[in-house]
Image (cartoon, rainbow, N blue to C red; front, side):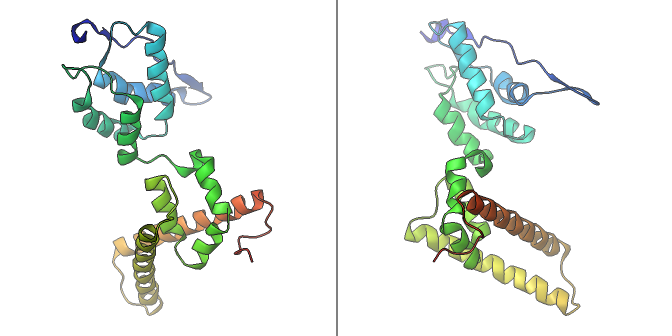
Length: 217
């Protein structure tokens, strides 16, 4: 019954000690402090303490990649999502994960199956098409490669716009013309993202036994 729920049980994981700066908050503890504790939902009475702890620890571990401000934003989004007639029961894991992806997508580096896509022929193809950054962004958001015609069109259009923007910045700089500071910073970040993605393609290709990041024949 909704009137018989117990508060979340279990204790937060203790802090680790750093060699110079003293105690360092663990990722699990940060998720509890910024997300789980502020939400303060309840469990149904029949859920024992061990199951409560397992559920909350599992969430804390799964969302440990998120930044503190993103965790707080996630808490704001989830407050109205409680279950039960009183809306005070913990939402299920799928709800947490879905909203977390909206707030801060899980990095591809933590998803080896998707990351390996860049080691296939598709990684070098995206590089050759000038779409590598956009493909990376697409997969980060959707957690799936751009297989459909619509997805590929979306990626191509985004890449075309980015490459035109980058070309304008580079041409104006080469001509000694003024470029807005925000455009210079965007170009710097875009080129850094491209270099990072190219390094990942090379690493994933090497892991598959390919000598370089070129498109397979």
